[in-house]
Length: 252
Image 1 (tube, rainbow, N blue to C red):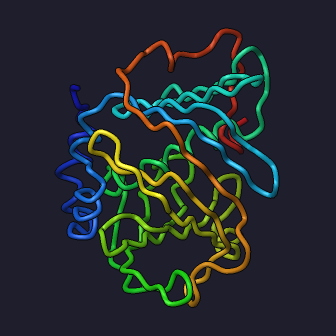
Image 2: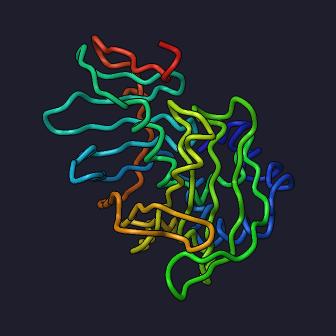
């Protein structure tokens, strides 16, 4: 697969601006070389929060261009064409853009720590759960990077150098001050290796604090199944017929 200039930068030069050892160890543990040699990542995804299923369908992710498609039985197809989020058949789907851009990031984050505009700095050892501490690094973003450049993450690396968890704030459709009052965390379990690339297939979401790690009962859960790589198909990521755009909040 031909790599774009951005992909090459993410794989090589950009790492010099980050916590190189932390990121390189994660990339090696997750099989970044194998991952980047593929064209399209596909998986069946179930996202549930607050007792409600938000997504239950199949995700297609163009690894090079980061375009996304989500198909769900009985619901309109969602497409991120690289610039805009589309909902097929003239329908509306609240949060379509958020869903298209969020779950692919959480799935592929071990391969994105050195993306252009991403800044990774050492953050010491932090607790995650009772009796568990991990080496961490803080991930921030440059101006105008992604839909929520003010988000930050604390990445937890386990003894096998895999991404075990991330705490984070969500500024999408909000502000930093409000978001930092309610930080959350995603905990990754049940790792699976597919064609040399390793992914977590079981994600649990919690409230989080720097002092104690995850707190309280789970807020949400994501199950990932049937992970596979396929040849890229441009038609999957084109604007669907009669589609309506789901715009970035504040830009509508």
